[in-house]
Amino acid sequence: MKQPTKNQKPRRWRAKRVPIWTILLLSSGCTTLTGGGFCELYLPIYADYDRDTAQTIRQIDANNIVYDRLCAR
Image (cartoon, rainbow, N blue to C red; front, side, top):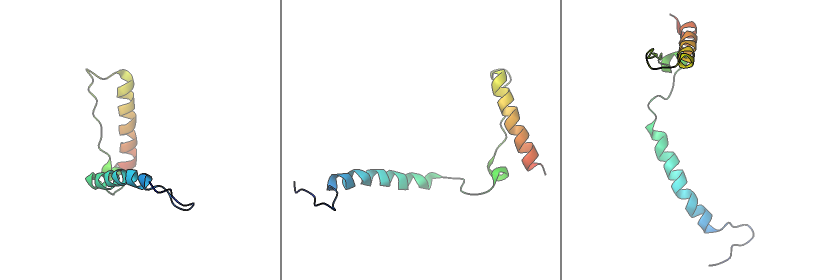
């Protein structure tokens, strides 16, 4: 293998980056929601009062209160 000069990086680093960039570029095309504000993107969460813990229900309620205050029409 030829040794790189002072300003060159070894080619193996470049070859390792190609699959990473390919995956990143291809995965960015899977997004379904690409724009809009909070009120357009957020969906209210519904608690399962038989299975969720009290803390989970409080967190769900807190999120939904924020949604109601910001997005009330």
